[in-house]
Image (cartoon, rainbow, N blue to C red; front, side, top):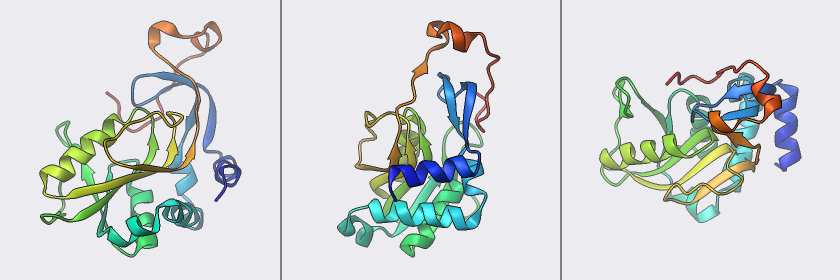
Length: 193
């Protein structure tokens, strides 16, 4: 999929929002990508996952034995990536603030894993999820996401393959431009801290 095709999917599902948003990283932005909306249509989610799987190098695709995603945002695209790659898809949860496997999910020693996210804003959640996979005995070969909001600057410690890279400006609370500060801030993400 081309970048324009991906953004067309976001626009068609009304998943590209404009206003004043507080991102899960705590930074502020005039734009928010509501991946839950773009993924609510199973056909669209499948198309996006196939497009993302096709962006992975062939030798990497052949090595992946499991897809792991952090809850909540990564669950749907992780599941669809598991389908696209014909491997199991499981997810990590944060019941007490740190990622862990629950629900009987297991990672076997040496399992070769693809970490899948919906959106990468700072990479913090992905790095935490990678540590959790490694602590469980897995080897994260690479990470993939629908959207890289860092403009390509994120370092996850493993190769990273986004479907699309966007560089919407983000701001710390004390550096908001006047036009953004004038709007009420909305925190649409799933993480409230």
